[in-house]
Amino acid sequence: MKRTILAVLALIFMTGCGPDDSIEQATEQSLEQLKAAGVQGDLKNDALFAAEAASASMLQVQLGEAAEGMAVSPEVKGLAQEMIRAHQSMLNDLRQMATQSGFVLPTTLGKSHHEVYEEVTSKSGISFDLTYLKNIVEQNEKLVKRYDDIAEYAQIMELKQYASKQLPLLRQHQEILEELEDSIDDL
Image 1 (tube, rainbow, N blue to C red):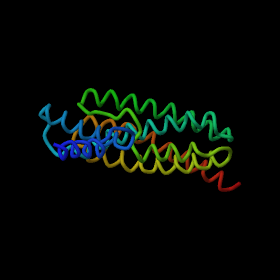
Image 2: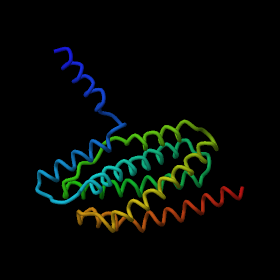
Image 3: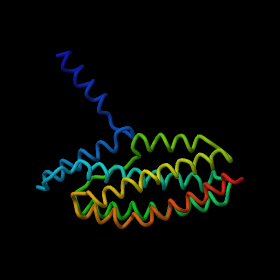
Image 4: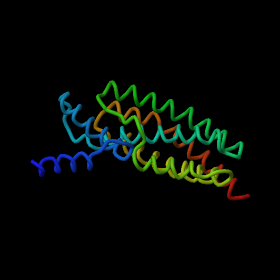
């Protein structure tokens, strides 16, 4: 009896809910839901992308909101406003697609996104601006690669269309970010 209780407690501890596993949980729930709906094929990459994309957009919105109040540079504040607008729109589109296609999305940041948020918001002044910009550049580069991959290889057509629709905006952001980064490097 004690062994059973300890095993259950260990299982609960190892699979605890929270920001550390929101992407994994959403991915598994999506796979279960898609399988129950009779969708065939290897959908792990599709389900994982939907969960990662939701967390990434939530990160961009939350960092943008933090930057509106914490950034020193007017350029960084302007960038933050654009990121909030764009990624909230992307998140709304993703949620609509997820509802139609049977994907489950996380409602909290995934572990790596939570860590980025903590790193950026722990700074202040010009250090905040530089850390925010550095992380936004890195996150956007990852997003472009991931969206490009899904636009080409997704199994679920609605997900493929969603990723294809968002790619031009993400590439535009990349250009803006590189220009802003170059202008800061010139200072």
